[in-house]
Length: 198
Image (cartoon, rainbow, N blue to C red; front, side):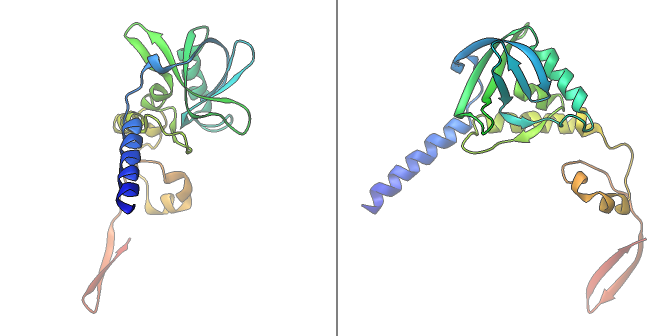
């Protein structure tokens, strides 16, 4: 009996891992519709008034730094264009909005708008279970944006001091920064070296 449960659990894990490792495809979309308004960098309104929250991402909120950039980036991708929507495990959020992976046709083929906003540096990743499809794809887009210092990932200019980072530690948690400091002195305490920043 234990062996059967173990095998069933192993198969379930393999199926879940395969689903998470999938590449996006507009062929899985179930809704075709046009966008009439962009609310912010991760929310849009469709013809008929339905609201859509883009899955897998979190753009700066209105009033925050780069919120307008994120909103205009989404606007450029979706306004007055035919969109294909693909739903994940959960179709709606607690606010009644559709949760979707949004595709748009470009000259180069179909693009997953959610991931393109991440790749362009206008959104961070946000996966709320049970939704998690394409996580690896989004991770690669985020890595590209960070390495290329695009959008919000290019916000730190120059070098920061330790004091500047400590003063706003929460904001720095998702930033890639360079810190320069000078070692003031090195003190040995029973064989353990302690370094103190000057």
